[in-house]
Image (cartoon, rainbow, N blue to C red; front, side, top):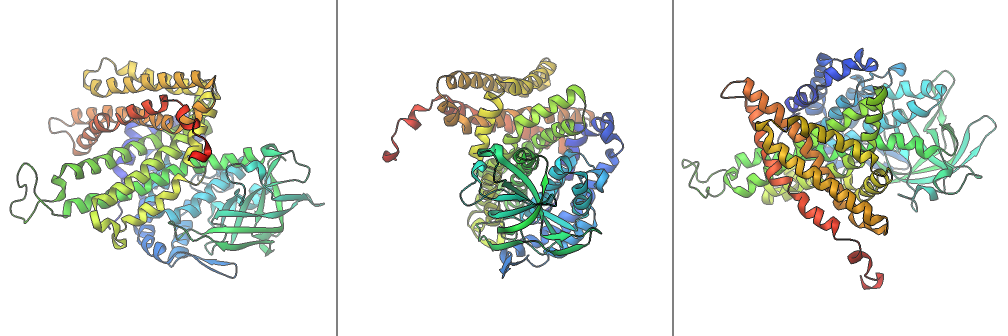
Length: 598
């Protein structure tokens, strides 16, 4: 397996040349004092060292050894505790945290790139701190001052970690039917009883305490999701002087044996009258948890990207070294027994697919992260627009990036041929690790329904219009630029097609709601490819200017970017055409067949 190298050049290109993040940060008072270009670069460089030198080297053994379970005790793989300590000591646990409680307050555009590095290095390791960051975000927004002071400071310091406890054996997507109960106590706390499954980081040996955010219902709560409340349940009680007390009535009943992410502890958690504390308002727990879940859904999308980046780096190194056959146009390396497989059209197709989709995903992730920063730190119209785009594009980030991520890990495996099927090369681990990203934090089918039914149809097209207005403005701005015609013309066509498809589906759905469910998956991917075309056009424009400014020879980075943009528009954007045909085909062919005929 190739040594992982963080794509710092591409990250800096996106931050400072394409999206001009440093200018944006200086225009937002809440960020201006926290971060500038030099700070951002220093953070990326230091994080790269951790990812390359500390985390990537333990990934293979983590997969081979996994976590162990013995009488309620979960032990992580060799090297994980030491790596986590190094990570925490560097202050990375609080990178995006609230500055009032010891966090660094960095923007999402930076923390998203930080997460990509972690996930490329080792998704299993990344899950521990990323889940903690999401839980801290929910606590910071909805928790009482007392809870924030007691728990956030230690979570940001990396001394304590966190989990989110939603799923039960009978209740996954439909959280309204959970059975976990919370009984009010005289001291204002709650006695929480129930069982949760698939709990990432529910038990482990990395930190001295684990903060569980648990969804539960009071006995007299309204039925369905309107009766859910959120509770903070610590593994160990915390004394008034903030030292750890006795263990709470929380235990790990078992761990799951999984297809991938072996070094991540996936636990069955038992709450037996455990003492918990209300976060937010009673019966409003789902809204509080969604603060964390939306953060995690974007993070899971980045997991797909992280695995795909590692797969591409491995496959590219292998393809350049592997000699096999001759080029169709004649030997390229006559001094060798055969040419490298880089001469073969299908190998180049696979590598360019990966390159274009990875770089496009990173750019689109950065764009969505920018909207999160406007939503979090902005004011007025910019904040409102940011909130709208985040709502619209969160399901796209989760589902589109993970579908492409899994595709690209499989493609990288294919480049290796038979060696890709053998464990020692590392490609099959990436395939196994990436597969879960399409499933957890809401399956990709649920994300597609969220996009089309809740965000597009539910807003009567208003959220969709925020996006199309921005892209149309960009098209109009660059319409007369002859050098951009090869990108602007297909972008315009794609946006027109997406708009027409949206109108068509909403019209049909007025008479038959099944139209939304039948077309949702296709629709999400049409949206994803179109949105990716938008950011690829932006990258192409900056790259063209970079070549022009560097004289006749240009710059290799910009040349590579421009060639890859052309590949995306000519070979990958057309994927949307078949998806549109499928989406428009209607729901009858799905629902006319009786269940017993399947």
